[in-house]
Image 1: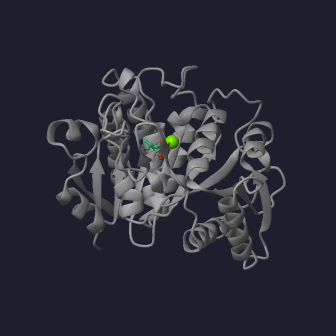
Image 2: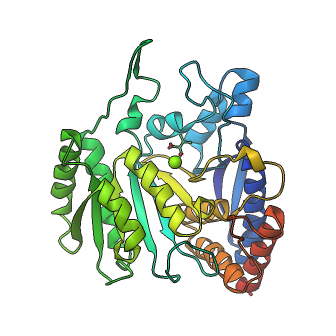
Length: 361
Ligand code: IPM
Ligand code: MG
């Protein structure tokens, strides 16, 4: 009876990254002990701003090679505000390589209200449960490092391609097919978010979305301009199931969604392509609280759950998610008003790990 093993590259990242990843690894060890049947072979690599500061590159070629060969990668947040490229952008950010470079075109960002978490909205757990599918390889951010820069003006351009839109739209419809619909009405629904009233690129995005959606007659198609979507996600989040959008819009609206469920410190994500996938929290490296055992590790722990699910370890993924909810619901893990866990990062990870062990028995 062999153990199922998966090769996983682990990148701790900058700022609060190492604390978060350590907490997630503590949970992983508990899952491996309790659930059994599988093992992740973790291959630790350094990447990000600190590496760039020391060496002049943010991701080594051996690390990139390891990521290409791995079954999946889990990373903590990277980037530091004072480590910049000559054009003023952050030097530690490795999204350009890992997203466009590895063609991980679907950036999957679940927004789910968990029990016991303070939220600025009047909503109960179960009422906010949608997924933003952010196009991850083109849109405005394809201009990263490629803008036209002069002393008097800078231009970044947005690229929307048929192929890029088709595949991310298909991802969104497939995802909706496997879900149970929006909390408000149980309707399986994919909402296309754009600004097709203003830009031709977005009108094209919407047209291609529609063409793909015709192949999914059981799923409702809906359209919202991005500004209206920003309001709707606050005013009637229960209505949403899956939303698909261009890269830059997805970056902004996923943080907005995070704000409605108690903060982006609770938000995991997966960057998924046909050949590669990597998983990370949606937030940054919060250097102001780094090394102080204050950061919320839930984003990273739920990131682990998403990765386990992707690796086919569905029961283990569910166990991690249930342990996070269980720890919060029972009051053993309390998220304070600032979004930080009472008792600290390490203790939060240990609490979730012990709930894992209890649930598994
Ligand atoms: C995210 C982050 C990144 C992005 C930053 C760190 C470049 O905000 O994953 O949402 O803009 O994509
Ligand atoms: Mg962002």
